[in-house]
Image (cartoon, rainbow, N blue to C red; front, side, top):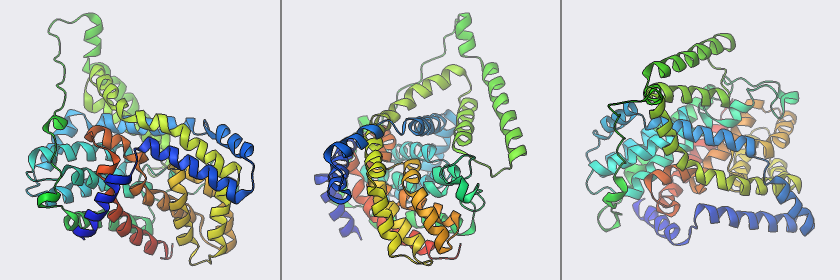
Length: 439
């Protein structure tokens, strides 16, 4: 397994382009495929691309807020102390990889933005403490936890179908999270992947000449500014814990009322963002501390912001030219009631390369696969989760969502993707087998 991992690490370090260039290449591929397969003219495909560029702006803002609120919460002092405590348990490089992947898996299940940032910070802490630890390996272990996100509390597809006004509500009604995220099969699949990640990283741990050493300068954190002894009125307000307490209390009261009225499992994307934003405000203690953390966190969202228009353009090509429908329908034609979820999942994995957004993936596949699932007698929840799993699966070799983590770790996608190929193989088997279970 180490030899196979090393092969993928070497190959991807040589040939995997930067994440932005990766999106550009995918744009050209989608453009060419639409011309060849759909029969559309160059101008028609170009118009589809241009019309789609800004189609994900609303969702992009939600994704950026998830990254920023998750990052802000993760870099609070209580969270940093907790991460240092966790890192102290690692005594060997393999142990560091096991701990990082396990913690990242749990945290990404809770909130993918929070999990990615926790993973990056934990990887840095482990690199400081454990001698002989390959830095790319432990950062990859952190990113590997992302493979469970779409079956977790911030999964955009299960949250979307539980939200009023969703894309196929007329066909399915609202699909509660008790049938998706909190269903027994979904919980089993997520648990198996979280448990398998430490085993995979123990088997992959590089040794000797294969170890990539880390530049100590990459692991130095900026010092927090000292609180002034003499404060102006404005500064007193900025450092006021009372203001934070009052604002935090407002948020807590609202959330308690919301969950009391709507039920504890009634989660939406906006509510998840709200929860992590207010936890971050409370954990940082003062308004100025929270704002400084937000200013630091926003840096990790830059790559997402600039690449979303490109992926919006690709989505425009896939939807408006009918290319996505051709891909999805091909898998449908070779499916039956038993295999349909599996083939929906595989189609989702392919489409995710071109539309690495859960919401975008749902726009592409939901209106096609849900009616097909109804005809075949497959539950709405299982179809939705099949698409969600396809999306999270190939994220392991689609570098887009690694950008926040890589920004903190100060590495490139090619430094971690070789390890992630092995994660793709193992978790692909788990999810595929899980979708063949009764739902």
